[in-house]
Amino acid sequence: MTKGTGLAGMESKLWMAADKLRGSIAPTRYKDIVLGILFLKYISDREKRDENKRPKSFRVPEEARWTYIMERADTAEIGFTLDEAFRAIERGNKRLSGVLPIRYSGEELDPRRIGEVVAVIDSFDTLTIEEDALGRVYEYFLGKFASLLGQGDGEFYTPDGVVKLLVEMIGPVSGTLYDPCCGSGGMLVQASRAVQAQSGRISNLSVFGQEMNAATRRLAIMNLTVRGVEADLGRTNGDTLRADQFMDRKFDNILANPPFNVSDWGQESLLEDPRWQWGVPAKGNANYAWLSHTLAKLAPSGVAGIVLANGSLTSRISGEGDLRREMIERDKVDCIVSLPDKLFYTTGIPVSLWLFRNGKRRKGEVLFLDARSRGTMVNRKLRELEETDIGEIAGAYHRWLADCKYQDKAGWCKSASIADIRERDYLLTPARYVGVKETEEGEPFGEKMDKLVAELAELMSQTPILDERIKKSLRAIGYEL
Image (cartoon, rainbow, N blue to C red; front, side, top):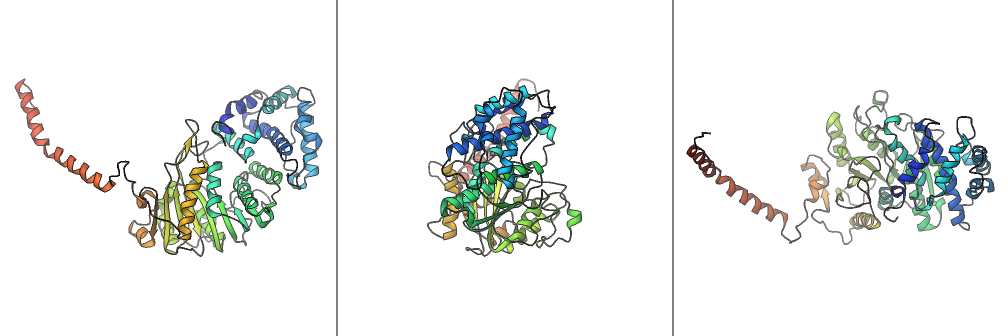
């Protein structure tokens, strides 16, 4: 994606569209109204672009095409036109039955304002937004109305670059793929697209997911359906930790960006849960519940990639250090990657990637990658991982896996043994292992530090002499220290 395009370059237009609704409905509903209209624009743009290669399982009826809607945007019937467009899509695509918004023709909504929203969205080039366009816009509104929507549960949209990186690293090509907190389906979409690019057949991958938020789950169904991805997202929306809808299943590939640091996750009612084979996760933080859930769902030769806040790498509260030790000693951790800050649209929090693998190729070793310096700032708040960053990180991991042309590099990567990790008290921060890269002049960090320490010692040795000179000078003008 070109810098400055995509959602980061469309904020003002998105807010302009939402602002047309001010005073007529509650601000917390802005996102629902705008998202529905954006969905129609998005699928029409894709239909026009991919006329000969669109998924046969998805069709956009004439009465739902954007040109049809725009012809009626300035009429009093625009709300009815939109509702009928969604009904037509549902009739032609049974998987979307009961999923799409049909709410535009009620007395609550002013047709003139809805028409103005349509006109603003008409100026969008939706194909310049990230592939998970709906999910990204949804997350934008969550951030915009954080205080009104109660944002604070640690749930964030997974950036496109992070999704691509995880997919590149675990490389799902066939079998089953599972996302236990699938959000708007971005990871499942990206993984399915990667499989299709490799084999030409999405059907090689059986897709599963679960999402707690009902509105977000509907977005996931919409996202997957328009791309022809058959996915089982469970019977309904639901909390994966409290009510796993795939209790008896194991998965070959798992991708997850669980909500960070959730305190009230229901530990008291799950003390005897069989998923806690490493120990019962802390009551006040769900991070290790998600890690334990992922390991419990992993097939005998499966691989998983999980995005978590950095605290999960070092925390010792309520036994988390013990759980981490068990995961390491049983050789389940394959790779840890530190990512830069400001990758997330609504928070600057830096995160890390955990990679688990059953039946590890490099037994007794963990690869640590420090990628905190990667990425490019696209504005003052947002950083993106570019293709070169993704290729560099994923390439280092795959070279290490294959034991081909891999070498430890100070400040970047280190293959550490379990004994090395044991010596560091099972702390998993990559910087502790990779060290610091050599300076541009080529002087090793250790040698440079030796010189700096020697210089500091020399200066400190002169402190008493300098103190006495200062006192003498002060006494000369009548002052005593």
